[in-house]
Length: 115
Image (cartoon, rainbow, N blue to C red; front, side, top):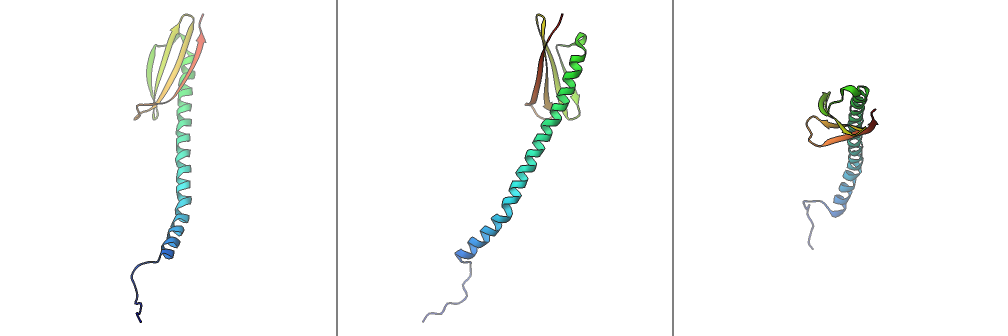
């Protein structure tokens, strides 16, 4: 007869049990990481919206001083204010960028009629 000594290694069942335990711990962690990342993006967009809205309101408050274009630095944002005239209509828009980013995060615009 052949005697089995202690063999090094794990059985397939032990490996499956270990992997399932590991996955049961990691799955909630990955889910919570995705949740917090989404919350961070939403709060960033909300802050950009607030900065853009303040700039658009201040732009609309002084129609006599409307520039064609101006760039304003506000907190962590770079805000480009634009005014385009088409006859009696005026398009006022605000484009909000993060200071480091090249792509705009959001754009707000409205049409106004001037006498």
